[in-house]
Length: 169
Image (cartoon, rainbow, N blue to C red; front, side, top):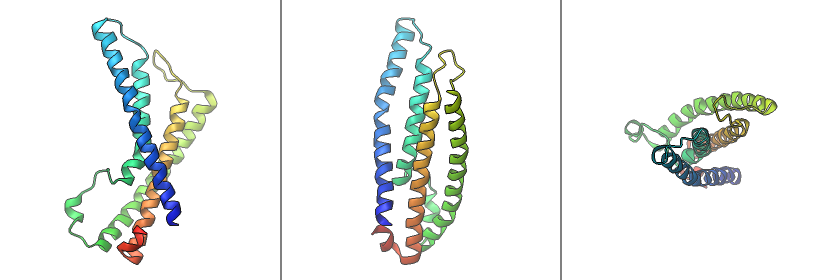
């Protein structure tokens, strides 16, 4: 089981690091648009749409990475005073809602992506780029987030059952 959890960690680590590299083309894209728009007075119709798609890719591909590295918001002032097992119990209860919510989100996003793929959906902007590849990418990112949430949940349950050492092995 630990090998499977490690594989999920590696996948989310890779996806998060890969998504981080997308900041470079996004930065150049914004710089390019600013120069064209404000220096040369030549606004573009496509940079906004492409920029939004890159930003969405960064966010969804980085979700599992953030969960892996405990990068999401937490109210540490309350739970830091609890023992390891009490903290694990509270986390286990909260992860029920997290995993359930992400599973429902993934289900609905999968339906939306499948429909977008079937009609080769485009955005309704002036540039009108295809949107179905982004919707499929969102499903992949949310799927990786769900897997990471399940992996973390299993580790929390192992901590509850066997103590802190079992979750680390």
